[in-house]
Every structure is written in structure tokens, then in C-alpha cells.
Length: 448
Image 1 (spheres, helix red, strand yellow):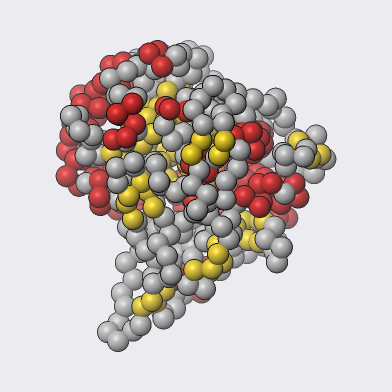
Image 2 (cartoon, rainbow, N blue to C red; image 1 turned 90 degrees about the vertical axis):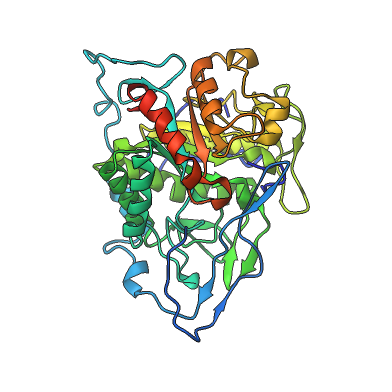
């Protein structure tokens, strides 16, 4: 969500890792609360030069946790690579699941409380009632940030488990969790030319642990892979090089490497987990519209990328990248696919992508022009379920969260997820009672 928060339809092909590829001129590849670390007295703790992430609405800017680099050491085991062959060979050698034979058989299944307009998962059509986590450690949950003393989920599992327990206990059935909002973590490895070479040493353990914890707490995950924040220029903060996505997206070789050595193995890891059904959705991109400039292709208003802080791309370039990403995910995973659209203002932006449901975000500024009282049908959105992927827990002027949820549920939306458990500015702790009450009043309709 922003406005200053800075920040495709293609046939599905199922190809092996060794498939040949060709590239087009636009770069499109066509395939043939952070960890609590005790700092002893006198230990120096130094912040990086800039705040890592800003989550904005037109009316306000919100600053999230700033990672600190303490002169301390975490056990080398926290960041040790998995034993065995290097990551690329590990993923290539892994046997692919038979997606067809393992498909869920819903014959004979009676859905006792289907929701009109809901999202179907595990043979149940439900209202996606959930929360944005959105992270335990910003950009560090999957891969860690060793230089800043921040480890991933496999190491912080006890703290993450406690937070997930709280979400579940207060009515959340789906949790939206950010994976690579930018490239500051060790979750992705790069060579000297800034070409992705694979997933980082602990990424697999972190992702598998996240799915295990989801199973333990009986929740489903919406894994948000990228955010518009990745379009900030390449820079170094507190000794960590943070690469920008635009040069990778537009360079055919680098883009192909990102798809084949990062996205594909990521999907394979999740699909091979015994808890794979807990990954309900791959949310490919958080609010890509904020990194886009120029006119829309399908009748929406022009895009408003802030070129002072972001390296912008066109709608066509972003759509092409998302189409490629969706195609890789489809070939490796049975999870649903969506895009975290910034606002219903750009309701047609991703209408030609291979998505299972549409997703939009909702804040004060959106409500001024696109009020919460309107239904998907009012906006002409009738071909797929529509989920409000972000809304403020404290509501908007004239409507608290309870009123927002009740309106969307009654008017045919497919779900809503509040922002955000680890963002204190949005008061999860003060609003979770009404969130839980809404769950209790619609219990069957909100449980997959």
C-alpha cells in the first residue's frame, strides 16, 4: 500500500529445468517484530544509512523496523548451508511431483458452507479471512541477513511460532507473508555481475519451517514473493549490497536466471514439503503499480511511479515479467496465484494474467474514490473472486474494521486481510478482538 509507499495472459507451459528458451526485446523470457537479540552493555549498535521500507497511503507514511548491526556473532549454524550438493544441482536432481496425479480429488466432497464469490482451496469455497504478518524480520525471514545478525525462520522458529499462534487464536485463517521484498537478505545469491545464481544457503530450511509452523497452527499461507521496494536502485546499506530488480527484469540473461534459479526451485521446495497444502497462494508481487510509469494498456489511469526513489518500468514490461513468473509457478506448484494490486483504481492491470483470483489493497485514499460500499460487480469484476489483500486494522474514517469486513463479505468479495500484525501503527493488538468476533460469527465460511 502507498501512494508514496515506495514502491500477464500467456499460455502455460510445463517444461523441465533444461528447457530451451528465447528472449524478446522487452526482456521477456519465453521458455520452450525482528528477532530480539540481547545486546550487552557497552556493545556498539549502529543503524544503516536509511530506513529499509516505507509503507504509505496518500495521507500518511509509515516506517517499519530499521535493522541494526550489532557487533555480535550468531552461531555459524544459523547460516550454514544445507549439506549435500550445491543448491542448483540439489533442485535439478529433485524428482518433480506428478501434479496431475496428486491433484485434489473433490468428487464426493460436500462443501457444507460455500461462499458466493469465495476462493476455492482444498475443495472448499471460502472467504479468505486473514492478516498480513507481514514479516518477523523485514526481508530476512527467508535467508536471513547475516551481516546484521538477523536469521531466518528456521532459527527464529520459536518467536515466529508464538506470533502465528496469536494470529490463529484471534481468528486468522490465512496469513500473508513477505518473502523477498528486496534483495538485502541472503535468500538469493548473486555473482559479480549481479546475476542471480540460486537460493541462499538457508532459504530451503526457512521455507520448509514456515510451512511446518503453518501446519502446526492450522493456518494457510499467502506467500508474497516480491514488492515494488525491489525497484529501488542498487545500493549498499550498513555493509550489505541491496540489488535493484529493474536491471535484472530487463536483462534477458539475468531475468532467465531469476526465474530458473530462484523462482523455480522456490516453488519446488514448497511443493515437496509434507505441508505443501498450507501454501494456498503465491502472491507474485506486492503493489507492482508503484514501480510502473506511463499509460496503462487496458483503460486504467496512468501509473505514478516516483522516479526520485524508484527505477521505473512500463506496464508492458511488468506484465511480461509477471506472466513469466506465473508460468514457472504453474509448472512447479499447485498453489493458487495472485498479484497484490495497489488499488482497485488499476482494476484491469493484471486482467490478462493467469491468476486464480484478483487482489487489491485498500486504505484511506482509496476509499475517497473507490468506496468500500461498492461490490465487485459494481466495478465490473465478475470473472474471478476478488480479495482485499490489505486494509488497515484500525479502519478508515467512517468505518472501523468490523464494518469494512461485514460490507465486503455481504457484497460478494472473496476475502480480506488486515494490515499488519507486526506494524504497530495499525494496532493489531487493539483491534484483534473485533477481528476474532467476525471470525466467530462466520466460522464455517472462513475455514478451509
